[in-house]
Length: 167
Image (cartoon, rainbow, N blue to C red; front, side, top):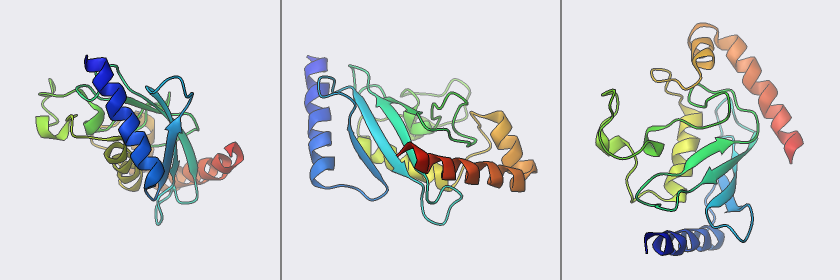
């Protein structure tokens, strides 16, 4: 029953994004036979280090979506304090619902079933615009962001240029 609901919800969100695209990203299925695997293209937000970049990511939904959050992993290289070296995105709204065992996040900052593909991707675009270096997924990137910004900036600019080659 829950799986049927998640399929219907994901189909509706896909149809909505197809009919009414949102500026800054595009989304579609990796394979028409699997509603739980999406490919997204995120454009580097204007007036940020990531401007001009084309970043491909995979959005993998659990069968109990929307009760539990999907995982978002960048396929293209991304140097960012909130993206693990393997590409997985670490932002509050993608963390399981409920209390944070470390006490860093409040329950209302974490996953809520009201989130949609659109709100997730808008949060990722926001993350690109303003990294949270207090709770880094990539400690090296966070350290460089804080202590050697010119080197951080150069790495990101190289990745942005390289991202256009993936198209």
